Image 1: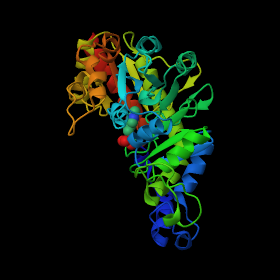
Image 2: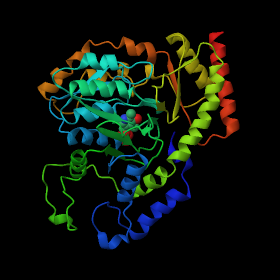
Image 3: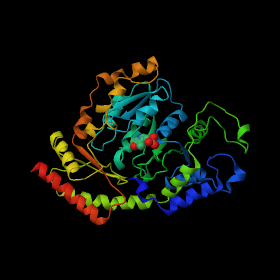
Image 4: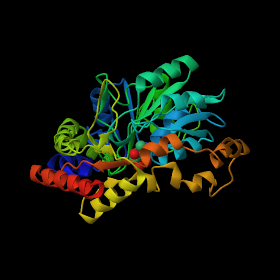
Length: 398
Ligand SMILES: *Cc1c(COP(=O)(O)O)cnc(C)c1O
């Protein structure tokens, strides 16, 4: 997945444009920048590539989720339904606004289980936030129907699946708002960065202003701009945007490489009876950033994960025991270990985590291994890797 594997002349050229005229800030300094507006160009190209009316570049994927929610007016005491298998950023971004993350089970798509979502809806629920984990997607048709029925917002986090599509549309362009990350390990990277995607004029304007201290960005005198509401600084720099722009232009190339590598590994693993693969919803086309499969039980999965390590098969994750991606290791969230006092509303809103179990998710995560698909492998390396993976599994199950 990481786009940094293939950094080259294109990234350098865009970056040098910025360094040569010296304007590292995305707003203002019109006279000095010799026509270089990397953040703006990046946003326009994101809109085209990801098929939305508006893209707003910000400082991180985590910030993108916070801003997306804030833009839609979500805040204190509001409940957001999210999966218990994701990156910690999902609940961090929600809690930043004093809102309450409501964690629910996933299914064999490794993303939100629509039934579990429906069970979790209360009068305080404002949005459903599927996280398209490991290069594939949630069942967006089912989730959209639930949102319509209960009048909720659909906010997609496609940080790990940029380049994937659902019914022919890019992930992130389907919900009311989409969020993606451009951090250093994502399929296209700008070092650090995030993007808010939306067709909604109002959410876009709010994201634009909120991510820059409330600046309304009217006119060409930054100091004279007005502030229709309070904001914050979640800006990204021209340096980051320049790299992101070059990487975005290579997204199709990256997805094609991943698909080729993924298929070689999938073909080899398909020959093993006990291996099954994650479900990709009908109409879905993955970004092929990971290959995710299930083994028969927890014990077997642990042994296979260890065999992979011993045999040098890196970048394979057994998320059951992972500190960053699965509820089992989020005791800091359950215990509300914050540096500062939380509101009583949030404390009360998160009490459910003390005794909620996630058996439906354990059933899948305990048996799942997800392996990163790299861009820099040669075909021989992928074939060799696939062979070793199959041998590791064979040695454990026989
Ligand atoms: C990487 C990631 C984020 C956060 O992105 P940052 O840019 O690192 O803040 C959010 N959600 C998911 C699913 C991610 O993988």
